[in-house]
Amino acid sequence: MTGMVTQETLPGRDETNGHVRIGALVPLTRPGWDEAGRHLLAGMELAVREVNDAGGIMGRPVALVVRDTAADPHRAAAAVEELAGLGVAAVAGEYHSVVARAAAARADALGVPFLCASAVLDTLTEQPTPWVARLAPAQSHGWRIYADHLLAAGHRRIAVAIDPSSVYWASGARILRDHLAPHGGTVVDVDVRDSTAASVCDTLAGRHATALLLLVGHPEPAVSIVRSVRRDRRLAGVMIGAPAGQPEFTGWVTSLGADGAAVPFLRYLPERLGPLGERVATALRERLAEAPSFVAFEGYDTVTVLAGMLRSQGPGRAWTPESWASVSAEGTRGRIRFSRTPDIGVWQWVWAPVQVVDRDPADPGRLRVLHTG
Image 1 (tube, rainbow, N blue to C red):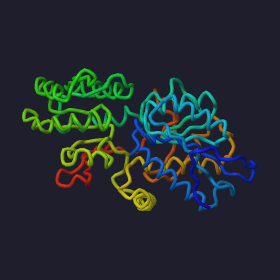
Image 2: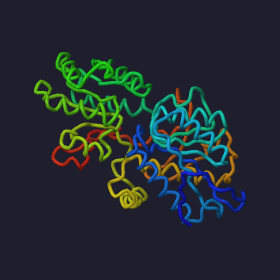
Image 3: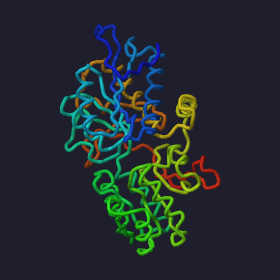
Image 4: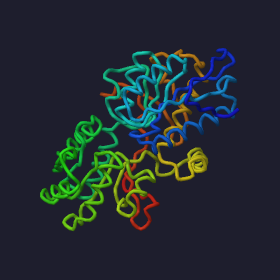
């Protein structure tokens, strides 16, 4: 058997002999981060192929029913409703936190299992739900580790170029501020809606900031800001950071070249991959024709977890509040188990490994691990 991916509704099939359908939410077109979506889908497709090569779910092949969210929360919520109507066994995926939050709310309302692959926003749902679980570490966990890296590197005066209209960026700034303050750190917000790249540089110089964090979209305004800071002699010692992970993907290097090096970001991989991770990394590299990002591993692990659950519980929606608690799956980045975590309403893998990484100035194609947590 082979993995099956479709953008269209699958034709009706007999419930016993047909495919086991898993809905896949992926940003594949702009304004979504389509490069991240491509990696996420590649990981999911690879896992589906391997599940099917091993006999599928109780002899039935798995099929992904893919929907492009394009980073639109309304589109994602509508996709969940459509997928539920198609009778999918579960919904999986998504990269953008705000989009995943809309999908999670709809899945909860409809009683459809949703395994979120990559979005990190703590408040993925407003209230606890038995229907939603997440593989990515919560933003408060990962971004505190990033703040620890800033402190260890000696940064106490930090500016953030931010679009505060985004709940994701606003949440990130709050986490950084709350974690840095007890250690004497200060965070100055520079609202990019009212600023140019040049005025961001003026604020950095005027506030004597030693670090600028990009809490903005890519390619713009992130690329323009990086270029302006790199060329401003007043800011020769300023570190640029991007905790959300913009430099992870090759599009960053294509846009910025050497200017995009030495920009620390968060990555959710262990220091060393085990045998499964190494094997999957090789297969993903062949599929993507480039080094796989952590997002590709998240996609693979998502389908692996769901396949294990569907084998043990059957391909129908026989979900109970304890279903996620029964998971114990070998993923590419470690053993995956879900539990309840204070202040997080979904079932959470506690925790995926976290690294702070940057691109080597001597070779921007090479990643360097700066900090682990």
